[in-house]
Amino acid sequence: MQKVKVGIVGGTGYTGVELLRILAAHPQAEVTMITSRSEEGVALADMYPNLRGHYDLRFSVPDSAQLKTCDIVFFATPHGVAMSMAAELTDAGVKIIDLAADFRIENLTVWSKWYGMEHTEASLFDKVAYGLPEYYREQIKQAQIIANPGCYPTSTMLGALPLLKNNLVDVNNIIVDGKSGVSGAGKGANVAMLGAEMSESFKAYGVAGHRHLPEMKEKMAQIGGREVGLTFVPHLVPMIRGMENTIYATMTSEMSQAQLQELYEETYKDEPFVDVMPAGSLPETRMVKGSNMCRIAIYRPVGSSQVVVTSVIDNLVKGAAGQAVQNMNILFGIDETMGLQQVALLP
Image 1 (cartoon, rainbow, N blue to C red):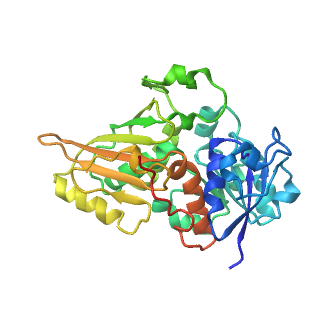
Image 2 (cartoon, one colour; image 1 turned 135 degrees about the horizontal axis):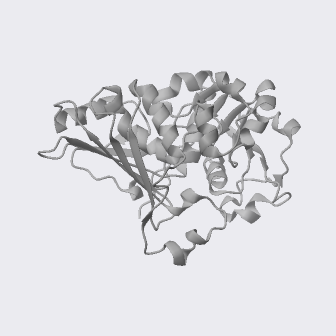
Image 3 (cartoon, rainbow, N blue to C red; image 1 turned 60 degrees about the vertical axis):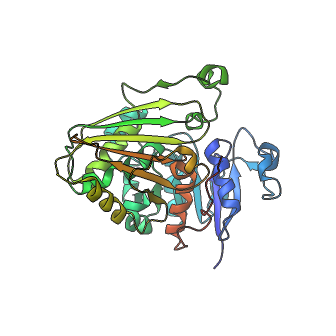
């Protein structure tokens, strides 16, 4: 099989270098160009020494004509960039995976409210699939544009959707308590992310509203068949990588702990990147660090009507670049696990 020619727009952030790290070991992919206006001419190995010997590329200015020579283009860019180039590229037969939020939310009035700009490409949504393979795999196969999910939505929905899909909980009051490492905030200079500011500390943020909230609510309603009342509170924890989401809901079923465990195991038994852990387990972020795996545990606390699901991912892999490569594999009929078999780093 001929290698898939890959272009990456916006390769200087954490998501961009993670894409490069994963694709360097992908036997069916070849990165042919990577763009950055601010770093034009800089060699990849000079910016990212971990890639020495893997790429002989330099950053270039985004050029539509050159990008059209690719089979697929990943956008690891700020919101609004992918939609500005998507029509031209897809008209030329290029597939797109957007790791920002341009195509994640179908209700564009809601999207504009949360992202503070007008969405200019409503006509492209018939080419779009939401890139959560465990629930949208068939749509992904047929799409030209993949909206790669946010990190919090990935972890949360993999944990919550079996409950919603099977009508097991009160959908009016679901609570998600999220925790993420500082790499989720991106690479840009930010005083709040300085080591002296966030080390040995822990805080909530986005309590009044977070951009991932409408994304989660829309997709949960699609899969569960009903609107969802969702409270989502993310927290910043003093680590670089990793994300844990604890999901709380009130059961409307008498399902036991053992039955819930069986349901989750059955739901994800054929999914290569979701691991339903044995009953009584407590997933830790270090169990998935550097890997494309999501690990989940489910609890029915004794004497309570609540159900508690805990879900961990690496926010830069299953929460971003790894899931993007998983989507690329699906798009091109490649083994879904190709290039993604990395074992988690421990310790």
